[in-house]
Amino acid sequence: MKAIMWVVVSLFGCHLMAAAPLHKVGGAVPGRYIVILNGDTPASEYAESFARDARGKLVHVYSQVLNGFSVQFSAQAAEAMTRRPGVAAVWEVPTVRIADTQFGVPDGIDRIDQREALLNDSYTYTMYPPTATIYIVDTGVDPRAEFGTRLTNINFTSDANGYRNPNDYTDFGLPLNDVWHGTATAVVAAGAQNGVAKWAKIANVRVLRYDTGTYDDVVAGINWVTQQRNARPTEFHVANASFGDASAPYPPADAAFRASIAAGVAWVFSAGNNAADACGYYPASLGAISGAITVGAMHPQSTSDVVTSYSNQGPCVDIYAPSEVDWGDPNTVAGGTSAAAPHVAGVFAVRWAASTTSTSAEIEGLVKGLATTGALTNLWGTSNDRLLYALNPKRRSVGK
Image (tube, rainbow, N blue to C red; front, side, top):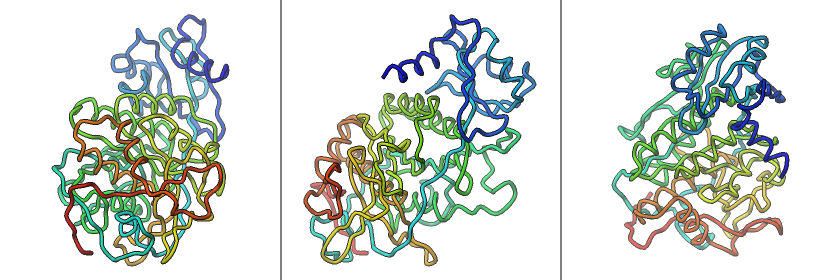
């Protein structure tokens, strides 16, 4: 606990020190840094001049979840930045990766609208006004008929020189190759034919390319999602993050996630595909926070519901949802806890729209409280026995 408290102080309370700390991290991206400013030095006013004076490339400015910015410049410039008045801390930026993907063919949305294990080739759901947005914080979403006009796009990925084009949905000039992850995640959450919340708005928040990215891009995505929540407080905002690895929290990202959750964004995290305790993986461990939820993967079969052999488990996994699911692409299926999480994101949006007045923490409690219990097998003794359930009292049936 003492170490954690020191990190918080290092982020926000070092303005009394002669020089701010320069934090080293494993797997750092060469030349990429996040600069945290003191409270009396707003990033919105000073980021550009700080980066310019350091002969760096300004990449992102954070105003909603951190008071700081990310920048591309030399190691010498980073050292010099720690001595500049107004700087609280400088952090190297590590890489971040999506979870691995496994393959199979069961139907996820078929399973979650019934208590019993036997699939019945139908999905029952309720249509609501589009007052909820599901943010797919991922590798990118290809536009397709399933989304129609409900899809909006923002790109936060930057190249090795710190250049970012918010309207670029190619891979630096090459055709977009994200159908296997970001698009699948969006379809499962809110696709018109194959998704859970068929009416919800979808925001493509691109923070990764292929299967990797940098944490400063991720923080920029968190910042933007939170900005949308603050701009439209009467609407419902659910963010899906199907990425992570076995690591301690990266403090700037951790502070950003926590600020976003506190602002009222409901974050849904994948548990990870390592057959390990999810409490040792990040950001999966954030599911312990009220208003956020971490999702493990299960495999619906004809007579039982089996937690997959690869899914992380343990007390940090709040709920389990289907994986290895058909998402409408004839060549691939959506697999891993990456595919389980957007089922929960979709149901979170459904329950929130049905309640209209509840907080994200209250809806989290409802999603967990209405889950099916006693159905899962291959469940660790330390794990929560909850299988996602989607139905609301008022609904209409739609055959598949």
